[in-house]
Amino acid sequence: MLTKGSLNILTDLSVINSLAALMPKPRYRRRKEDRPQEITAAAFEAFAEKGYAATPVEEVARRAGVSKGLLYLYFKTKEELFKAVIRSVVIRRVDALVDIVDHTELSSEAFLRGPMLDFMKQIPGSPVSVVIRLLLAEGKRHPELVDFYWENVVGKGLAAISRFIDRGVARGEFRPNAVSEQPHLFLAPMMLSMIWKILFSKRSLDTDRLMETQVDMIIAYIKA
Image 1 (cartoon, rainbow, N blue to C red):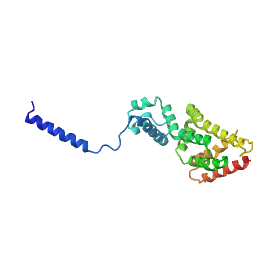
Image 2: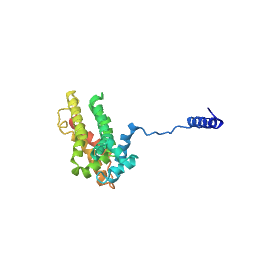
Image 3: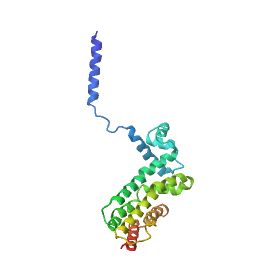
Image 4: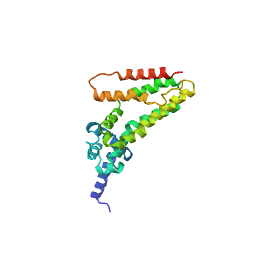
């Protein structure tokens, strides 16, 4: 049987629930599926600031706002966490370029002067350069990470460039040449630009002009 007091309680609860329903929902809600990317972003930030070896997993967890135990549910080792950074920062860019290389309808020269050159120019000032800096500094002590980078980034990119040059030869756009065997010629100005920024940050280098000149020279050498 409801008393006057219990009716008051029910009424109060009804009012509270009604007001709660009218209150705006939080703008951001942390979703479980977002956690790996949030942890990866925190790891990139920490590695970039302190270096790979000097960054404890606890620091990454703190920046990501998760416990160390929860971090290990997603990434079993610190090496796996760094590989996730490489996937997020570098591999997705390379995969996108490889897809364009394999499916472009542009002429070979137009592709080199357009999408390829644009990609090359973006790399030195991008987060990719941070990953390169980390690998240069600490790769010797962590060869498994260097091997992972080679297999998933460098090797994949070189193979795509070789296919592209060979296709240009088959189409009659390029003459037979040694570039398909030395696709590193396209990587060289990107690597030099990143290393230059690391070692000689106070000395200017027009990296865009450097890459434009390299592409010009390659095209002049291989054009049919």
